[in-house]
Image (cartoon, rainbow, N blue to C red; front, side, top):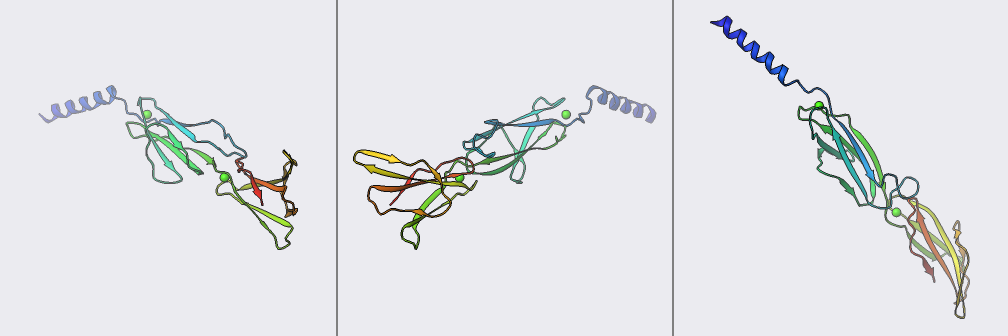
Length: 196
Ligand SMILES: [Ca+2]
Ligand SMILES: [Ca+2]
């Protein structure tokens, strides 16, 4: 009897909806860097950064976290993401519950520079002057510093570090050397070099 069958199916469908309410609420996701704040200068990290992801949902106990780095494809992320290589990272996370609801994306930018600048010194065409130059791959050179070291007998006497702005004097004296170094914008300081 068609009427009887139709009523029966409708009853089953209604019963199913009541016992398993549809999940229409999207999860939320957070990104927590460790260290929490940049440990270098000017917003740069100078040590590896671990990003922890946490997703919560109204029904799904363990929503899936998907992560995109620098605009790349989203892929499932199990556990933390460790950034070790120098670079600027834009990391976006989103969470997906079992019903397929996707959270609003959350983005952090991590700027990581662990490498000091390289520095060189050479005589200018004016032979008594030394030009110092530095380069830095990621955060850029913030400053170059120089000082003189004078050896008198067993003693070393150094002048205070000064900021380098233009070629400095190289005195023709075997006991006097020019020392120099550079600092990048993240705060990494190169080893001290000497001239000659
Ligand atoms: Ca949900
Ligand atoms: Ca650097």
